[in-house]
Image (cartoon, rainbow, N blue to C red; front, side, top):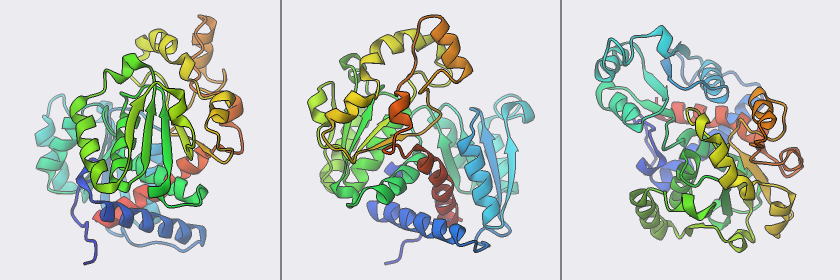
Length: 330
């Protein structure tokens, strides 16, 4: 039977079957070729999408706006300072109002329950642009990028996430890998591994049994051998800046550098990052922390700029992935 996702919200990849995720990936590749060919789109003509941002962003906002405009739709951007959301109006009431105006709602913020409330009460598809526990649009872009750069199917690939294994990117990658049969290694300090939500880990293990994926969390560097892709993220997420010194102390041994890439024993392994990245002292934050004796770089500049790095392909693919998700559901 054909895949039909019309009217579905996109809150987490755990809500979708491998076949449905495969459909979104295939459509994303197709829409990317369409844009590269200069073919104008009308698949979202007459559609209005509102973007709700409680966390700032470069890639997510631009990807959604360009994706919608490319296919003939329209976008309204709202942030906390320009709406009553969560202040004079509850999220339930906000959802009901926005559902009367818009064909779809994107939310980027903190609590996963907010995006779930929007989906429950709005009556239109809702898209998770990032929460504290998930980042599903990123994973569609990441799998697109892996398929472009690794010459074997996803279910034959091994992906390693290095760093804070409790963060939203690690969880999101586990969700995607367990669905699509990708072997996954979360590599980080034992102290952080012990903080992983056990309900989440049990769920991904159950899904992995169906797909044939291996999902492990470890502080053993030997488990990285043979990886096709190594992935990392900043060590302190937005809103966690006060934890930076302690996270840096814990995670400095897990910085992705040239030695770690050699330890994969795969010279063709790609380096991935959801961005933004601290890879040098070229940002205000990195410089400020360096002046205090804290080196917050999660990846060395040499690895970030190497020929194995595909981070900017990932960034571009956010737009193609989001376009696919919107077209599929609207």
